[in-house]
Image (tube, helix red, strand yellow):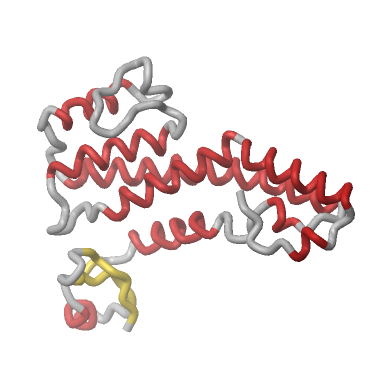
Length: 207
């Protein structure tokens, strides 16, 4: 973790600076905090694959399932493109490992509903990690505050911004989908997801 603004830090007394340094190091070493970063990165990759749009290819299942495994167990040592086994799969269910290994052999998922189920489960897993991370972050904020140290020196103020973005995306996923703004207007809907042929994705649109 890096301090984006060192001015508040330099204004601290030396004992406070040492305490802040320790908090920053300890916070960054928290396993849940590390897992949040890894899981968020892979969930973002899953979202960007474009499941259900023309840009998605069956071969993308390899990246989709691999990213899914990393959101379930960010600490697993499975590497993309390698066959997973019990030794490196960590806490990933055997059926998921088997599905991944089948994809590596060219046996891809049968439909988009299966793919969307992977994404939905990954989002739930990420939300669980985020809640645990928020609890840890609050503990460090309290320790910093009690010692007169600005909280954002220890816990970056934008740390949970990605969590908020995913929550917004989850809400957007529940919106009705349309092929064009005209289709949406024809049904009297003011807000929905409209397909953008330029990107091959559905994007939120509000009239």
